[in-house]
Amino acid sequence: MQGKIIKGIAGFYYVHIAHSGIYECKAKGIFRNKNIKPLVGDNVEIEILDDEKKLGNIVNINNRENELIRPAVSNISQALVVFAIADPMPNLNLLDRFLVMMEKNDIETIICFNKVDLVSEEEIIKVRNIYVKAGYHVMFTSTKNGVGIDEILRLMQGKTTAFAGPSGVGKSSLLNAILPEANSETGEISEKIKRGKHTTRHTEIFNVSDDTYIMDTPGFSSLYVNDFEKEDLQYYFREFEKYIDNCRFIGCAHVNEPDCAVKNAILDEKISKSRYENYLLLYEEIKNKKKY
Image (tube, rainbow, N blue to C red; front, side, top):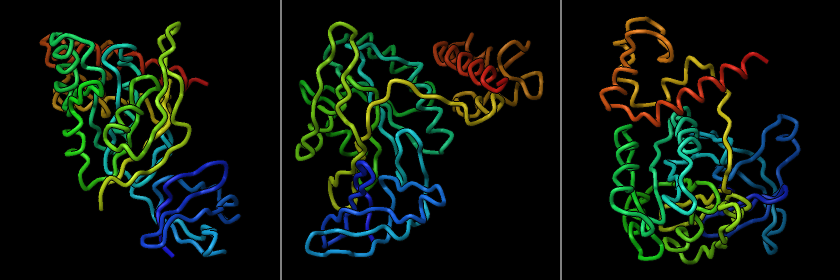
């Protein structure tokens, strides 16, 4: 029988079979031998062990359209990454790392800044300009007054959306507003360190409507981008693309080279300074890691 993995906990995989329900499955040993781990989002074939108790084994994993390591999911149409615009303040370096990961995997990303009720219009415009200028769809939400919930539902229609973001940004509350039946646990912000307690402990898929799914993924506090060369990083900052071929030197890294079109675009405020600064930090990080 064909189904989709909607949750994985401690070696058990919960597979949704249309018109039959959810089966608790183990993965056959052949996957371990091949070092293949089933992922939430995988379309799989299972053999039924006990139809009454809804037990089975995963015997085949269909080809994946895409695959992410963190969050560990497959076959997603788009990602919606949630950061709080305040309380806690957004870590734009962490956001840019996430965007690099999505660009590398060719997955379209919507950026959502939550808790918009806590800030002024001026602060909203400031952060919007950074990422709209970079070519991203940016939206703002508030679970307190319901702002942006309808827009999220519209953007998710007919797609499988990975719902991601660091803990403490209101992601679980946002999920509850979009899909009350998900009954996602909401966490409190630690007043001492202004960081969130992890509330989502595993990735799980929720069905919003016939062909619309949400993948709720665990919060992250750090992301490492070191599975590619430093020379490739520029291609994952999408706003660099129109300037790369205009640099004086072929192979320009946009770091110390003269007559660099990317650096000129920053001076002309066509590229955000904060995005470029994060590019430099990531470039140095990858360069230094490659030494060892």
